[in-house]
Amino acid sequence: MLEIQNITKVFEKGTVNEHVAIKDMSLSLKKGEFVTVVGSNGAGKSTLFNAICGSFMVDGGKILLDNEDITYKSEHKRAREIGRVFQDPMKGTAPHMTIEENLALAYTRSQRHANPFSSAITKKKTAFFRENLARYHMGIEDRMKTKIGLLSGGQRQVVTLLMCTLSVPKLLLLDEHTAALDPATAEKVMEITKTIVAENNITTMMITHNLKQSLSTGSRTIMLDSGEIILDVSGKERENMSMEDLIQMYSMKKQKEFDNDRILLSSEE
Amino acid sequence: MIELQYYLSNLPDGLIYGLLAMGIYISLRILDIPDLTTEGSFGFGAVVSVLVSLQGHPVLALFAGILAGAFAGVITGCLQTKLKVHPVLAGIITMSGLYSINLVCYSLTEKGATTNLSYDKNTVFEKVKELLGIRGQYETSVVKAVVSLGIVILVLCIIVWFFRTHIGLCVRATGDNPDMVSASSINVDRTKIIGLMIANALIGLAGAMASQSLGYSDINTANGTLIYGLAAVIIGEAILGKRGPAIGVLSAVLGSVLYKLIVAFVIRQNLFGEKSANLMKFTCALIVAITLAIPAIKQKAAESKQRKAAR
Image 1 (cartoon, rainbow over the protein chains, first blue to last red):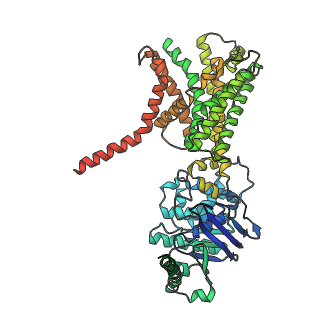
Image 2: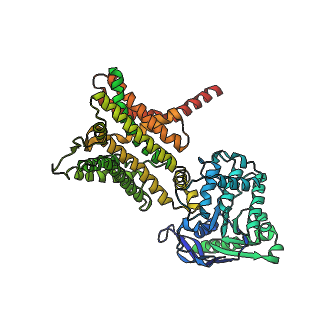
Image 3: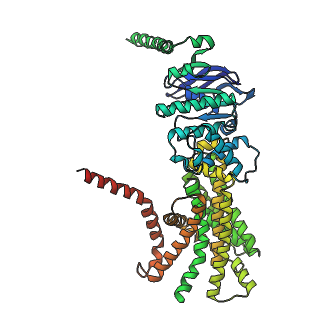
């Protein structure tokens, strides 16, 4: 479904601040695969998502979605097939507009050729949105005319999730979408996420800092470090893996870097 | 009776400038962009209107004014989105550029180089008066008020309808959260340009109608329109509050009419002495500054109260 071939992204190229965010990375996702992405700050997780979404163009390599080359497609055109939920609940919704207006806007993705001067909100659409919201028992379906800014973070994330999936995307990117919520709400939002993904068989990538969650959710786990994939496990190997193994792998990698630094520093003396 | 006539004669201008206030409401409040194109598009609408009217088509001139304003809006929009110029600078660039273009337009007639042109009674208002066989100063005011009111109501309906359509919803969301609009597969650049186009089209129409109401168009009529529009929007919000786009555009018109009447009152009563009329722009700036500062002042007051209570 998603095919990433040798992509590279360098920020501030040619300056002293030059920073290689993604280094010759390749990754292939099968349809319906649910991949969790882990890695420390600055490992390139969000940069990878930005590259896939088209927030910027990569310096080299190719990105294919469902066999279509999207490397040079603009961000909003890619958004037809790619849904994305951010960590910040404020980011995915328009706070001064009502729930139904937000949903109607997001639903554009499925109605590309609709008349731009048609009514934005129809009874039929509202009923459809209500029905979908009601399934998750968050008490949002009776507040269709409420401004989204008045909802709690958890409720906003559920609405955002629905906005991204009501017209089923080919790829869903979740950027730590439960990290800003309290534990109970985070769990609930996670449950809803799993339900939606499973029901529609959506190919999904999820960034998380919760290592336990990274192994218990989905079917595959990748670990990034300094713009490279340093671990890619699935199936039996993943099942037998524990959180400690992950941490160990990670610190092993870090230790190596540390040693390198020490050699470098000591040689200067 | 004379008093009533005096205030009535100010009503048409209040309504016409209400169109300007609607335009500013759309760019400032809905798109959340400080758009300084205003004085350029207002003047452009006025001069284009007088040129078309002098060919004998005052009604067509209003549409020409709309197009002129829309054109100015598209320029500013493209500068902001496609060329990534800072929104404030983009407006200033278009406004300055248009000033020269307006000057060139004024010298297009056989009169040669000039900075103002008379309509020679080729205005919508004169045509209506002629049609109904009306004369007299009082009657003229009534005709102007009725015609302006009709046009303002028509425009209001169109704008309210527009913001209920799908594309209208996209424009609104662009001012609220552009990231989300882009994530919904909508081209944010395009919605911004459309929004600015509509805002300035309204301002262009206001320019056309204001000059027709005056009976002549002058390069300097556009001066002070931006601050006027801001004041109108703010007064409107003070009365009707910050609510949806429908109430918003209505409040802008209301604010404009009210502001015009306040100004008329001040001048009539010579509240600021003999030369009250000269202080109008200052009053305007003062109203805008005070109203914008109220939330901060309120907060400061609340904080100091809390501090005192804690002691």
